[in-house]
Length: 465
Image 1: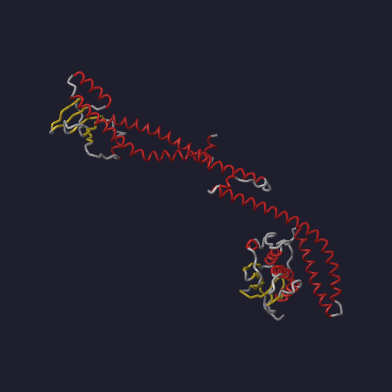
Image 2: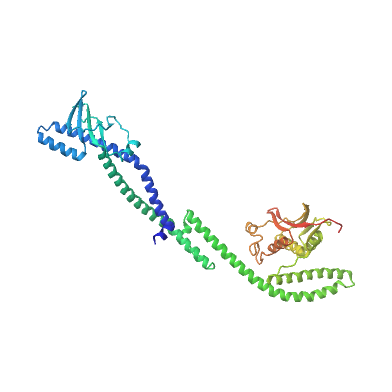
């Protein structure tokens, strides 16, 4: 039980608090011990001075002897003497035979309170005497002297050390428990609750999000709780998005299975129209053939994707101006008020899949047309440059620009839509198609001056169309 408590954050906090308090007590112990040593010597000097005055007022030798004996037992002082006009007078006790004395002068106004060397030596000195010089309590004599065994001071210092140790341990325990109790309520318990919530979320990510009391806090724990809530919402949103994509994929697979059969029949009709003797009908038939072929490939690609099959790219040398112009004309037919400017050089060729490229331009231009639907001077401009063996096409419009939310989630499925009834899949699909053929689709800018997309391709040698 105890090792498990030590391994937990609360146990470590309690032990560290106790250790820190003990370290602080150890740091202040030497100054306090030095102060105790000085006070101990001063107290005996004051007692010796008072007993000297008392003995001078007691003429009875028996009483003098009893007072002297009691005083020496209580203070451990062996000898007390006074000095007047350079002459010493013994007050009580008999001088010892030894000459091993250490003189301590307490006659200064303010004696030093911190003496590291003498303080530490007081714990080890057992032989010899201290000869203490002190100021008299009255003007009857000049100097008061007394002898006290060093062993007496050593015992007093040891008792003081033991008392300080017991008191330090008690203070450390009380302080540690108080800090532990406060921090356990303010920090440990909220962290434990948050840990349990994370464990519950790991077991069941789809469970409803609980309202967290820690989310109202303004400190780091509150920030952590709010971040966890945001993560829960993001994960659940991602799960919901995947579920919708799975449902959509199943529905699209069913639709495409039947649509492929319909397009196959339409392909037969378009082939016959393309072979008509009337040139206008033949051209319309050829265009219809290409449109139906794209539909068939899209349907087959969706079916392959639903079966975890990678769609096979048909990379070839394509005329970028022709593909972009065809996609723009087909897309802008329902929007006759929108002007089209295709500035792409007709001699510019790229390595790409023609159908994929058509769909990219179609999706991008359709988004621009929807944004320009109610604008009088609406215009879509398509241009391209050759930069370091990369062809970069720009699809610009002079619309109102995209909202900030749409810009942040522009290429995220179901998140980049700006209108009711739209799925937000067009640009997501376009970006995937561009990346699949070695390029990319990016948003360059979108503000009140309009929106500008950048579409990159692998370049090819330019030749006559």
